[in-house]
Length: 370
Image (cartoon, rainbow, N blue to C red):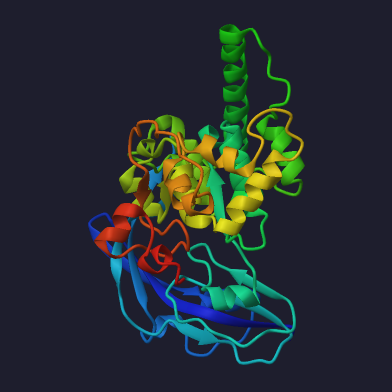
């Protein structure tokens, strides 16, 4: 064999009611399911009851044309504790690590290729040094249409210390391009000047992320959403379908609490996301690279930092010690929530304590110990 598998295993127990009859069945999850799909040997099956069991209620849906029907998870009903870790015992040069965010994973340095698979969490720093895999960050159209924020997130995401990677959908790109055209037209009406150096979202993707594929729309997921604003349902559905954990948007209020909870996702402003995901080194490096080739202000990293302070006060306040002689501008009034959701915006793990659920960052990530 050429592949070994290590990671979390659990059983998923699904229930549904049909014609008044309660039905229940269980399926393997995590590393056990992966091994079955790859036809690799596995030890104790997940359904035996020794492993953690997660419960969910299914609901029957019909599409609008009545051409098909399907079941989808309507409600998650908690779990019963049990074992979570499993290893396929074969000495193979290639390793697949499956992380469900339960914690406790550990393995020695691997000489061969490693695939770290997770849609819920990133490894802790020690494991991250061994296998540099990134969580997925989905950008909304309003962030894509804000040139400085968009570029800062993208450039910082290319830094060696970045723990996220960026993606967005074709719809988000189209909406972002349209917003930029509207901004340019408004600027011309007010000033008589035309923007000549502002890149479209498409231009930025081709320049910085030439290998990135636009995320496909997911109308079947959008149909299941209940409290997200209709205009943002395609955005959230596409993010969920690509297994993104975090949507960066300056319209957090448009993303429904119930939908985010059911999908196990979070929505957060660009300001909050960058404040907790950018290290000082990433921040200075990104600002420096953004200033390359500029012919107008800001001319220095300190000036760029100051110019951001009015619209991104959380980020710039956190980085203010880097520029002790720079006075920050008064912050613009914040409208609406900064965060909404169920997972940490840094590591992707489920938030469990009240403070973390309010700010969107787990205790380890708030203190920099993760």
